[in-house]
Figure 1: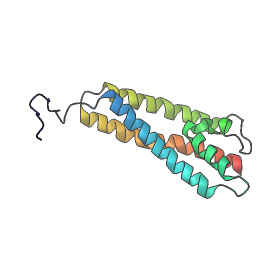
Figure 2 (figure 1 turned 180 degrees about the horizontal axis):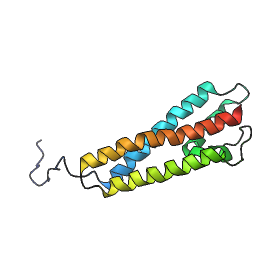
Figure 3 (figure 1 turned 60 degrees about the vertical axis):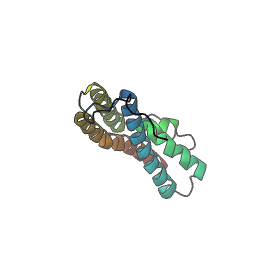
Figure 4 (figure 1 turned 90 degrees about the vertical axis):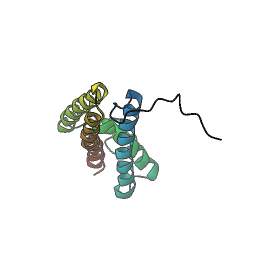
Length: 139
């Protein structure tokens, strides 16, 4: 059976990506960076930290510099983030919010691709700060 495609409008490849799809793209990037950190926690954590605690730490990395206050079971958990980490994390958070808002307001797809490319290192830095907070905490 052939489908009738006469009433389906063709999407212009230069039209901007819909906001819901943009947010989904950012969520996938953020979770992918978190997944890499989770794998690193499973592979590189000290032997005195058990596997469920490593998984909790890997998931807590999604909170960036504020991973240590919520990573239950880690040594020194519950304490606030180190001052440099908190400051860098705040700057990264503001930059990431600006990138996300900029991409939602962009009126061309190439600009949105630019914003997505700018978000990748910010997400990696955010997750990396959380990873370092927990690794410093465990040592």
